[in-house]
Each structure stands twice: as C-alpha cells, then as structure tokens.
Length: 257
Length: 250
Ligand SMILES: Nc1ncnc2c1ncn2[C@@H]1O[C@H](COP(=O)(O)OP(=O)(O)O)[C@@H](O)[C@H]1O
Ligand SMILES: [Mg+2]
Image (cartoon, rainbow over all chains, first blue to last red):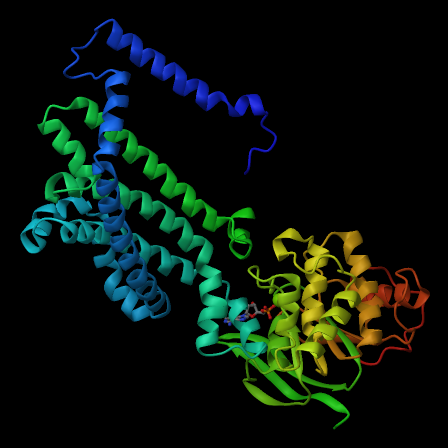
C-alpha cells in the first residue's frame, strides 16, 4: 500500500495543489469577486491565526475538543468491545439485541442533540454523550461480526495446545478480531471528530466547534476559516495516528492478504 | 506403554441422518505410518476427529493411547504470531527458558526456516507455512501426529518436496502418523500402510503395505506398483500384469 514507487517529484504534487488553491483564493479576493465580509483573504486568515494562537484561545479550544473526543471515544471502545464480544458468542442475546443496536447505529447522533442538552446541559458532558452515541454502536456491531468470523480452527488449535479460559480471550479471540476492530475504530474516530464540532456549535461554550460558531456570530469570517482549517488538520492527524495501529506487525496480517 | 495406539472396533459415525462411517475395524500399532486415501467428503476428517477424540463414535468402540497432535485441513497457524511464537505453542509445557530456546532452535533448524524466526505466516510461502505447522505439531514429546490433507493447498512440486521433508523430520522425531489425503501418490510415497476408503459412507475398499524405507522416490517400483494397484481397485486403471497376492484386504 505504501507508494514507494512514486517518485519524489510526484510526492510534491499535493503541495502544488495547495499552492494553486492559495493562488486562486488570493486572486478571487484581489479581484473582489465576493465581498470581503463573506470571503476573507488569505492574509486576513493568516493574521487571524496569529491572533488565535497568541491569545491562547486556539490552544484552549483544541484541548477542549480533543478531551471530549477522547473521553467519548474511549468510553465507547471500553464498553463497546466487551459487549460485542459477549453478543458475538451468545446467540440468544445477539438475536435479542441486534435490531436495537442496528436501530441506534442508523440513527444520526445529531438527533440526540436536544436531549443531550436537556439531560446534560452545556459543556463537556453533552459532547461526550453525543460522541459516545456516534461510536458505541458501530464498535459493538464490528466486534460482533469480527468474533463471528473467527475461523473455528483457531479455537481447536488453541485447545489442542492447552490454551483455555481467560487465555483463550487474550491469546486467541482478541488478536483474531484486532484488525477488523481497528478498522472500525479508525472510522468511528473520524465520525467522533465530525460529531464533536456539531455538538460544540450547539451545546458548547468552548472547543473548535464553538469557535467557528462564535466567529460567525461575531462576523469574523477570518477566524471562521482559521477554525475550519484547524478542524480539518486535526481530523487528518487523528486518522494518521490510528493508521499507525494498522501497521503493528501482529495486526497487519488482517490487511495484507 | 501399549504397542497399539489406536484400536477401532466396528466404529460408525453419523451426523443426523447422514451416515459417514460404515462399521470400521482398525488397529494402528505404535510407530506405524498409516495413510487413509479417499474422495472428498467420504469421511476422512471425521475419522481423524474420532481418532483425536474430538468426536465420539455413534456406535462401536475406540481405544486411544499416547499424546496426539493434529494438523488441520484449514490453515491452523495463528496469523498474529511469528514463526517462533507459533512453534512455541507446542512447547507451552516447558518452564525452563534455556530448554525452550534450544528446542525452538532445533525445531527451526528441522524445518530449515532459520532466518525466518520473526516472520509472520502471511509473509511465508504455502510450503513454509505447512512446515511451521508440522514443527508446532512435532514440538514436545508427543506420540501421534494426525495430518489432515496437509499438502493439498500446495502446488505439485512443493508437494513433492514436502513429502521428502516430512519423511526426514519423522526420521529425527519418530511418531505414529495417520495421514489423510486424496492424493494416492502421496500416500504411496509416505505410508507403511495405505487404506483406501470408498465414497460416503466410508468403507475400506482395500489396503496396501509398503516396505521400502522413506523417503521413497515417486518412481520407485514399489510406489508405482502401489499406485497402480490402488487405481485399478478404484476402477481408474486397466487390469494389472502384477500379481495381486500382496493384497491384505479387499
Ligand atoms: N459436524 C458435522 N455435521 C454434519 N455433517 C458433517 C459434519 N462433519 C462432517 N459431516 C459430513 O460428513 C461427510 C464427511 O465429511 P468429512 O469427514 O469432512 O469428509 P472428508 O474429510 O473426507 O472430505 C460430509 O458429507 C460432511 O458433510
Ligand atoms: Mg476433510
């Protein structure tokens, strides 16, 4: 999958695209195609960046958003994987709960926003709740399907070689489902990052989502763009970090074949 | 210890209404290499499961003795473990770190995979993976090796090579072997005794003994003769000029 064969020149292409986009953006503002009040110039945005960083506000918003995503996502993982393991093994419980889990998975987490505010007020809690609702159900479903698709021969081999009880879970089941589960964690982490922005726009007093909402209310389109850029970059960084998990030697078998 | 590893007395097995094994009576003495040949779905894996004790007969009786290891028809290596880690599953009883190290070294040398200790199964060729499975099954002091079509997924030349490898490994670590296969040449090249199964429900069609020590060449007269006789018995080759006095059962 690594594009080793791609020449160094080709690797600079994304940079070229970025510069071209910047050039078009500059040209559009310079020609005043749109009024400055709804279409900030690159220079205004760069200044806004400096402003947000030196005031320490960007740092605060970043920490607030990352904390919420981490808390909600970790909670969903820590509860979702065990539930998925249990349902993956118990046919009765699975038959009973699968329709409900599918229902909640299909329900947009944003539909919970009104209740999130009513139940948890404003701040960290509603955002964490919404992120949890966004990632918990996909994680449970992925774990169930991963457990169900473990080849039976692994369990027989394990028993032949004297692996039993809790060791069966840690030495067979968990490593066997890891690749599939990690793929889902990557997807849901991305989803969580989408959800935190929406949650903070409505139920926050800080965080990157609130920052762009606040910028819009204050008619500071430059800061709005600053917020958008940071949100996009952090989203990519989160994804890259989780991709590293897929490169772990004892996990990679699940993707290479 | 008794000199008979398996003793089957009129053993049958059915799954629901499907009869898989007709009454089968069979003795396998310690140290013998028995190959069971038969078409797909005739009940070969079922026989191995009966021998290993994973399933019990519907009727009849089995006595088993000795510690057994099985190499399954499906890829049984753990893909999340390296070659060394997979093999050491077979050495879990060893507590002494130094002993474990030396055993692992010996087994890796036995399957000629030095330099691949830290490779994962998906980084190995089919033949190498099969060697690791066999090493894992040969690790430790076990008595019996049950092999379920271990070379079926390999290409022809690799299969030929693996037969020689298996013969060599067994010289160094002798075991009672039951090899199940649909490959008559493989059976004739490796086994002391070839048992030919009919279609399901499996019934012994014929039995053939070979005496030439392993490894045997594919074109060794004894192998050629055995293959011919078995094919003839299955109605797949013309009448033989060879005498059939050596038939043990029909
Ligand atoms: N657990 C089982 N439940 C139902 N039928 C089975 C089971 N195991 C094997 N069979 C049936 O028994 C027959 C023989 O299977 P098997 O021993 O796997 O054949 P072989 O290994 O010779 O290809 C097949 O028809 C198969 O469908
Ligand atoms: Mg089979």
